[in-house]
Image (cartoon, rainbow, N blue to C red):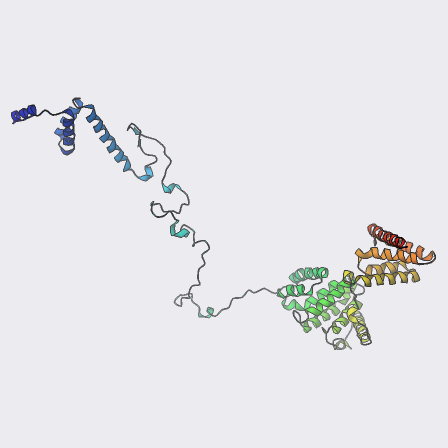
Length: 423
């Protein structure tokens, strides 16, 4: 048989490339160790061509790459790698590409899906649901061991605790003091309606009156208007009566701060009766059981004012209207009457007190103007000397400032210049 094979080979010569292919294929198919050894020897014998050698090296590189691809994705960045020449390079540090390296990443780590957050953004530790999600009211489970049948018909309301004495003063006093500035009774009624006054409801009128006793006449007028507007919507008539009863009992203490407190409280009582806040029998109920002299003075003052009102006296204008609430013509008229009374009496202290009672410090330049015009229209030097004495007193006491004096004289100069121009 060997002779036949040699004869066949001599008749059909085989090229080196064909032989290498047959040998390589034989290497892959044959599993025996002897055949592998012969092939290696043949390869080491250098009888193969350079082309077959390069094919063999390419196959080895492909096998090495397939082994590296089987590594897990976790070790892909720090494992072995192949260089361009096919050599294994160890210890190369490549930035990890695994999704696990990203903190707080809610995207799918399997590399599937559209890249949206898990559970629509409602997943993750400590997350109760999507942002802005509103949960519907859950039905009551009657089989729940904590189920209480009495709670089904419960109505929950916001409860404001009633004010105690300390909180009442800290809350109501700023409201009344602010009212003295703006004079809006509706705003005070709205603020008091939002409070839970409780048993302190009857303390509101007495607190307002006690603050008004230490204030100006215009503030007392505002207080009387406030009491008339609060009676009904916020306070009742019984609350008003209880409040004035407390004022009459506290008169000995109020006199220490305000000596004229009995007369002023009597005027408040008369005004309240005329405004139908107190009943007409309120004063008569005290007859025969009054032991305090201040209370007696206050009730007598109220009785006298009510009798005068029957004869035509207007109690609603008893306090007067202070400040800029009065028209300009009325203020000018009162200033002229003040100057005429001063020229007749010569009492500069009384004139200063009456000017302060007008409560129009922004309008005092008009008083100086009217005084200068009165001197120009008068005959003799008596009026000039008395007016100069009064203006000097008002300037020294800082009732009328230098700026107001200058402004009044500028108005006089314009008036005189206009009169000369017309002539």
